[in-house]
Length: 169
Image (cartoon, rainbow, N blue to C red; front, side):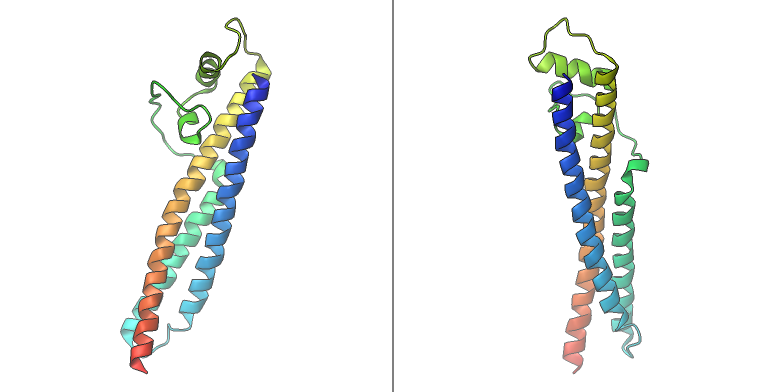
């Protein structure tokens, strides 16, 4: 049981690092777009100024979601505790639906463990760690989607600024 829980934890930890790397890339892009947009804020054309301001606002929102996601270990989301009949016990979105004892029982029932296996404190601690990491991964990926949406909005605003500037010349 302990080896299975450690394996699942390692896979979740890899997903967590992957999500954090994605947020780091978003932070870099959103910062670059915000800096680029600042150059057009003092333009005489009010439409260009407005689009640049919107681009900066969307970049800041994207940055906010990315930074919140990087500190997701301290964040919590309210989730329904609806456990489906068959759950993928290695998928983070399914793991977060369990509490520590339910997760251990599901592992014992779905994988080839002896039926008389009793859980010790290390099993429970590993189960809590797996569930906490799964919650963190879920928050990071969910906030990535929000941050990416605002980044795209920022890019679209900035594309319009560039198009307006090119037609003005």
